[in-house]
Length: 352
Image (cartoon, rainbow, N blue to C red; front, side, top):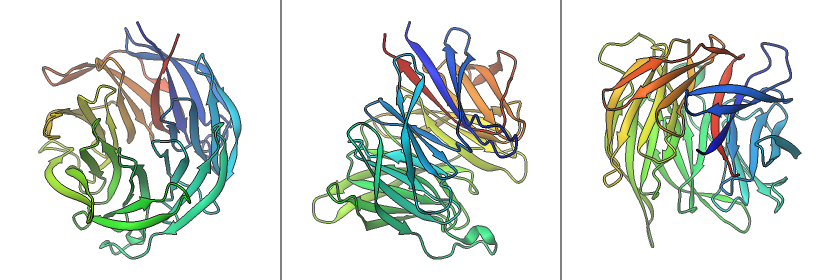
């Protein structure tokens, strides 16, 4: 059986402690986690692993921090990088692991940093501030870049802006690290695009909307002369017909085998799971059920697709479930784990 660890990022400002990343051994058989190490870092709101699976990058108060993943899953600090702005909320790398992108919820800014061959963080190559207003007559109508992810062909950076209800598409210059706008994907007014995922073959783009509580599915292809093309082929709710008022969608994650997609809902405090038709990209909802915690900021399937974990930001817990995809059920299978303001989880396979 394969061996895994899980990296969980969390905020530290409320608790006053220094350990923003925790490393857990993964019990695949029982769908549970056992803490093995803690990493001292402030407010690690989001973590991302390079596509070559060698390095982990984290948001922190001063900018970003890089780690080399050790053979047993532990993390060795490589260094830090300043993003020349307010604390970011999301980060990812391009598919060649030459650049690191951060998205700023607070200042509406995208920062591009060059990555060195050893995984460490180099200089800033570009900074782009989103402009404009959304349709909400409040503070959230300002630009809030909530996700930055490359298309799988490594040509375009997609930047979801929760405040302006758009996902801006940028062409990446792989030599200079500069971004140039190539397109805009317009979401419904007051919908708040939050997170983006792509199918294994790169043909389909999934965008979850925080305020709208739905997922839009796009068929993507790049035309030689006219640039990228995104055709919406489906819109599907993240909630049941009956749900708590004031709900908002949070996470969006694909299973390791890309057969399933999961999302979570704050307010309703629920997780939803979909089967993915790999030929058409279309989603079929299997269930939307309670997670026994408050404000699930992230929810993810274990690598075996038989278990699920919910990171409950306001109740300071992780809750665990056995998943019955065929019958559309989840059953709580272990006691909750206490952790202050968890925000993001990534499973990582240990190669033995």
